[in-house]
Length: 395
Image 1 (spheres, one colour):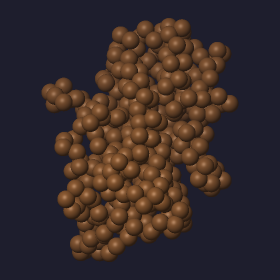
Image 2 (tube, helix red, strand yellow):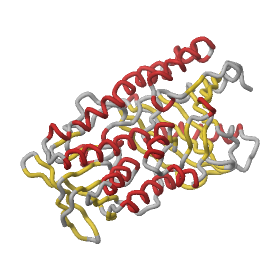
Image 3 (cartoon, rainbow, N blue to C red):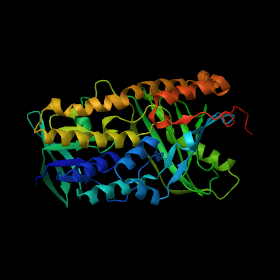
Image 4 (tube, one colour):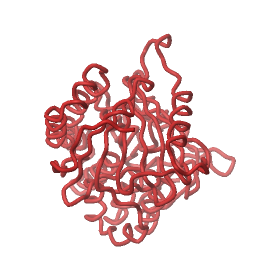
């Protein structure tokens, strides 16, 4: 089988990349091991930058018809005792969009645009010398090959293809678990994040999906030394029980299975995303924010950059590594500085003595949020509300 471009993975990065390339007139095969719609463990947050990409692709009216929950404010809570509230400019910080519906929305965009979808396992890359020119797949109970001029690898944090192109699995990484809870009381249109001594090197979250379902989860950094590793599942179960106990509705129950997975955090200095004939995008490219572990927006952005770079290279009849490297240049300009400072903020928030100082000082809380405004694209539109910003004991 032959095509012009193969995109491996139909998540936000892969679907946007396949959709853009197809609309620009390229022949694209989109591969994924799952049939859609399919669920995926995630906090489900789509930032203002992500919504801007959706709007620029002409998809905003369709997105709005899905009636995802808009988010207007955020609450950071320390040891279930002190909290800091802040809101977005015009009461807008993005949306909570469950991945089962959101990914299907982007997947449908790719198919509508002309991409050909094949449900298959992708086993290996086809390489001649140093050039990548296709993939080996397992489809309909038989092995096949797909020859292509370009390959985009966008099949997630656990991508064996991306790992095979880099010498070792880089760190840092985090592990996250998520569940949907029905009849759990939440603050409408407010995302809540909890920093607690029972959650070392991480935080928990409680996000409203709609008026009766919440996305509840926990994420934590995983260290090199296994002897210092933490039991994320046990901490997650304790957090769920605590949230249910605090809810005035005793009938709160888990809806569906608990989903989890590894997160490849931030820009790794020597991690390669550009190869002769191939690009790595999304979580497979280590583009997850080190601050909150959010990856949807950067995945969408990388999918767009990958598509635009390949289209430009084809138009100029240029296929060298240097031409494709413009993809990496654009990624670094858009994300590297933000990820560097996000890591600094994360380390400050996860350091217990610093947590107590920040959360119990209104001045430092304001300063920290103002700093985050300047360097993190997911919260670039935040405006401090002097009425809602508070530090006060909670019952």
